Amino acid sequence: MKALVVDDSRVMRQIVIRTLRQAGYDWVEVVQAENGKEGFAAVASEQPDLVLSDWNMPEATGIEMLHDLRASGQDVPFGFVTSEGSEEMREKAAAAGALFLIAKPFTPEAFAEALKPVLG
Amino acid sequence: MTPSTETVPLEPHSVEDEALSQIVDAMWSSYFGHVEPLLPAFEPHDVEGPVLCASVGISGARPGLVSVVVERSGAAALAAALLQEDEVLADDDIHDSLGEIANIVGGNVKALVPDAGALGLPGISTSQPLPSSAARQAARLDANWQGHWLTFVVWLAAPAHAPAHERTHTPTTTRSED
Image 1 (tube, rainbow over the protein chains, first blue to last red):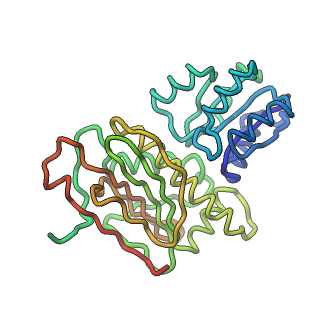
Image 2 (cartoon, each protein chain N blue to C red):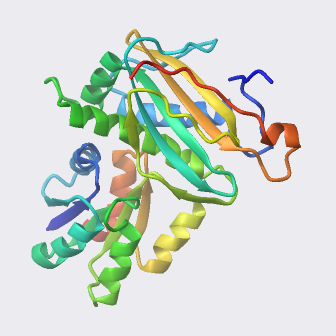
Image 3 (tube, chains in turn brown, green):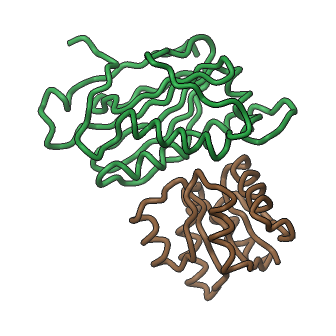
């Protein structure tokens, strides 16, 4: 099982990975990308079982990456981890095909609840 | 007119000191729960000496700016706590950490702003950037952590229907030497 963590902040990628472990998923292999453009390429090269992506990033945003993935026929499970957790953002995320949106600040419990349907 | 940093109450359901305090509390609880608590100050306390400031912009009907200012030494300690690292961190990691703090606070503030547009990417500076002249200070939180002072400030443009004297209120901020 492999997860792709996409965030332009190295610090936040480390926190997401740490929280993933704290949520009980220490057996999941993690690969990383720094923006939506790199994330799109990493989905093709790494074939992850799940993408955890920030929303606001340079080069390509998370929602742009998700649109591009779905337009290319890639249906990898996708969830956002973002500081913007408004209803409007959640609706946009769901409409684009995201399974969930975890709002920052988050807890291991929030990760466990969102990831259980995907990672078990 | 003499510019003022006095916090001006905004319309109901907008961003005020209490809302900002709750957002910062939630962030602190999630990411800094393993270290000393953040102690709110009862009065404004400008951060003195060399500082780092991280800011994110909010576009939309009421454009604004959300910033966090901290003593340079405090920024390094904050980054180490956020990353749970004991080693001395590189400047990139310190800037990245402070930027994420601003990003988290900014994203949650944006959710409270009616008709908000996009949240910008965090920017780092050694002085607090001045918002546009149309913006006014909507909320402010001064706090102390392990002897280091931090200031969180939210600037927002007045609602379009606000009285003219509120729309033209021009804030000033404390600037450090670059």
